[in-house]
Length: 205
Image (cartoon, rainbow, N blue to C red; front, side, top):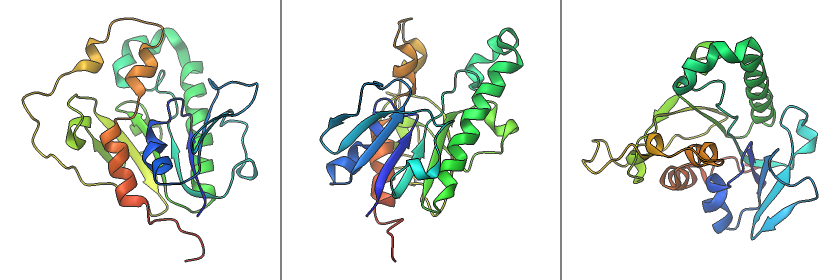
């Protein structure tokens, strides 16, 4: 069956529907404890830096997700690009490229996520984009998706923006975990990705 791998993933939101269905899931991020793996049900949270990982460091994948930090890439942070200098962009793109290589290496379905921003020009245009409200989470956060290896992008469940949609992401007050909260994968989208890709990537077929 293979393991569901999620790179640069702290919360594990993306893999929850897979774990609930019985898949072994591995979330790798530099914010996890270096003291050892933390296991919750079928999800293992492991410390790791995608820039130093090789394909041999990863278990045989069923599907791979990647969420490289958008701090130096998001269009919403454009006013700080100059002050961060070129090094900020280099660091961000190095991590994206490391994720891309790991995603594409095994030939299984993969998906890489980032907000609207510099990746569209520094890498390539995204394959798809979505808003959380299109999958039942009533807020706005236009998100870009790059994918390959047979990944199936789930068609939107809602095509017209409901009146009750709120820009809650932008209204979040400053806090130490504001960045984490802003970057959490909408659960409705995660569930839809599972439903359309659970049969993909099966080895030996």
